[in-house]
Amino acid sequence: MAPWLPSQEQVIELLDNEFARAGYEIEDVVVDANARPPRVRVIADGDEPLDLDTIATLSRRASTLLDSADTNDGAGRYVLEVSSPGVERPLTSEKHFRRARGRKAELTLTDGSTMTGRLGEVHDGRLRVVVRAKQSEWTVREISLDDVVKAVVQVEFSAPNPRELELAGLAT
Image (tube, rainbow, N blue to C red; front, side, top):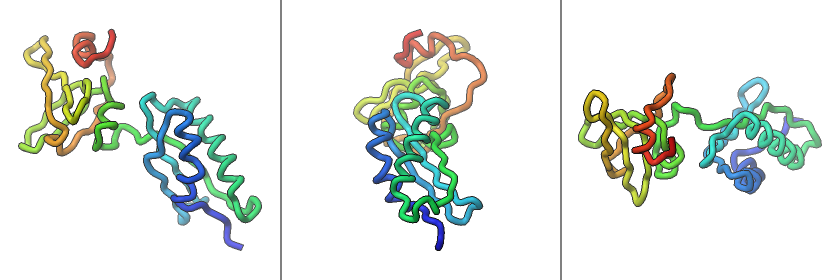
């Protein structure tokens, strides 16, 4: 008998409400039957960061729910992974920009220009971006999300400037 492996649709159907109750939504599910052992990867995101404790809790709940749906009485052997999208994920929707508020990002605009700035509020399809105006001064540019071709969060190794955070609408 072939081991039971849930489909992408089954995983979403079984886990969606549980993740939503915890304040997260399932962004993607990848079922890889060719991996050894087979893998089921659930990628979740929410307005609050997905920390290790939350990942562990969601993983335990997901495992219990998936085990209860196993049609082969435990014959399904696979690795379940719950993770966040990661910083390499492009920001493609208003909710992505909202969730990345306060983070530094590189944006490519429809006119071919690029800008790096701290993401501020997003409202009605408009994004506020804090950019360096001069050596030690900051300014806010407001751009339409429709003008953003690509946006990727940048990894930072030092604390942001308090004035940048203030302009991004975050308390310092």
